Image (tube, rainbow, N blue to C red; front, side, top):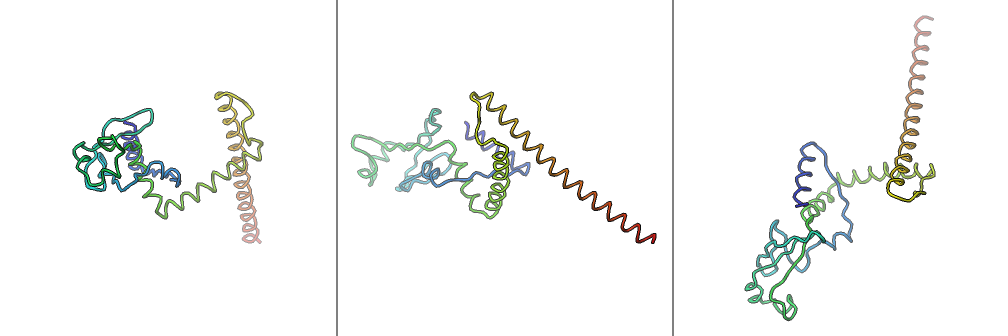
Length: 191
């Protein structure tokens, strides 16, 4: 259910021209990847022997779907001894509900646009964190969610005020330069 909502939200954002970028770390890739030659096909998996594993129960506490083949398929399989543990009748695989989003993100992360956006994000965000460090907000000094939220709000407010002052100063210097340039032009024209 959550994966369906996330897919719909991503589709709506894309229609508005908003592209989402999720960095996929190698550790995250191993935790959700399908191993041992199983292939993902939307609502089912295909095992290395070509048998279909259908999507079954959703476990919300772990946010995973369970996939399983027909018992007869596993019992007649040539890889039965290497694939199944003794006493187990068929193979069960669990796959995260967000696996389709993971695949899409992994494909997007191979593009040049992704590299450009991540570089841009790092320069902007790291600059903000450095500014907050200079303001003395390295870590929260208060305890409790509401107090920490308030302290974070004040730190963001201070950062934005300083940013506004810098932009205002830069704009004022441009205005002063343009006024000075106009006066020089007037003196040349009248002189």
